[in-house]
Length: 241
Image (cartoon, rainbow, N blue to C red; front, side, top):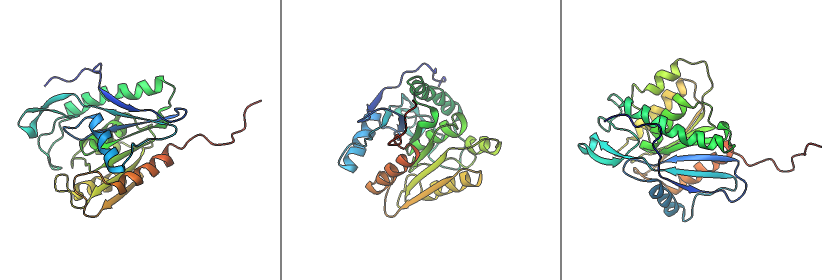
């Protein structure tokens, strides 16, 4: 399939901050889902929307494209895979073209006055993988990366890029269910270990008896981590005369 043009406009679901907007979070869904679907799933798990006083949350929807694991059937996926395995080549053409498209979301936030260092990128499953490619290879200046039930292939271009060194890397927050039988816990653990060995500051939370799903525990931990990376404005700051 031809590369997606960077001008592709992604459908998106946006949760505005309750107060003044001073930071943004881009949350990427898993394969076959949508931005609205991910927001509703989170709301179902938490019994309320994920909201912040100062952070805008953007849930984009991946365009529909042929997906090899579905025998070429169309699905809302960020990129193609040859198979769902950590031991096969990445479909780098589709990953890189989507990096261009998602860069448009980051650029929009920067144009609206949000510094790149006040933007977090992350996602669930395939969305987490996409977030790692986007942040570590294209936008290392973001505030951090979060990955829920996701992984990188063994010979990932992310590892190859990080081996070149010479720059600071965003911190990684990762959660993975020990009972996940679609994206194995070991794949997530190996990804975390590899990134740590390349100089990334990482945390990895194993979730006992959790399958390939979101859990309340991980979302509450994620919310706390988000606030450490994107704190609100300091109270009582002295104004310039």
